[in-house]
Amino acid sequence: MAIRVMLVDDQVLLRTGFRMVLAAQPDMEVVAEAGDGVKALQVLRSTAVDVVLMDVRMPKLDGVETTARICVDPDAPKVLILTTFDLDEYAFSALKAGASGFMLKDVPPGELLAAIRSVHSGDAVVAPSTTRRLLDRFAPMLPATGQEPRHKELQRLTGREREVMVLVAQGMSNGEIAARLVLSEATVKTHVGRILTKLNLRDRVQVVVLAYETGLVRAGGGQG
View 1 (cartoon, rainbow, N blue to C red):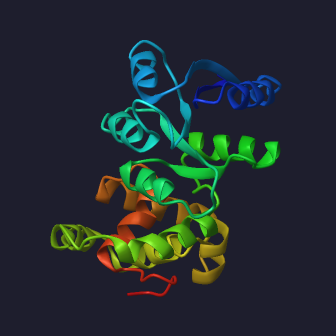
View 2: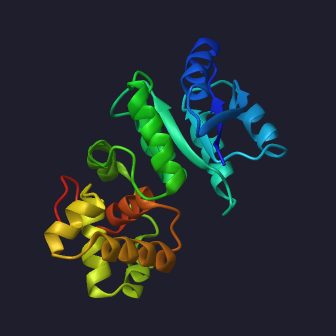
């Protein structure tokens, strides 16, 4: 089955460009579009979508609040944020709200397509090194609220799972983690899956965000 994509952006020309790129892919189809967050939420009530390409700066309802409302549902589509700036506080807020990653609007088509497939599969963070740099910049600005309960969540992990979580938060792929810990990629994937289940997280981006929130990884990528 093709990946069902929804385009949410107030720029018609940009949506048209993305639609042309996606339409050329045998494994993707654009099933819906919206020019603002309010319309996007209305459309999602009646349209089955796998991945939402979400602009962050829109009229009526911005991409951050729209993402938060979408991700409340555990069966919600994955959200991939589109931003104009590499280090954008809006993108950071969207990751906190539940987005599965973010890409620059001028990203080469091949990278965008790979990102959509990655987000859909749930196996990889989109541009992990970029996501980590975003967190490095904005995580220290977060108010220190609710950290104690989140610290307690980490107690559910085994020592090995905690070790894998640190490496995921540092932007490593499954292959890189496997090489570092002398494990098979399948074993690493199993550990990541257990981390997601135990901590009730949607994907690897949320693993990274939680690692920063709890101080498991410090800004700059070091271990806490």
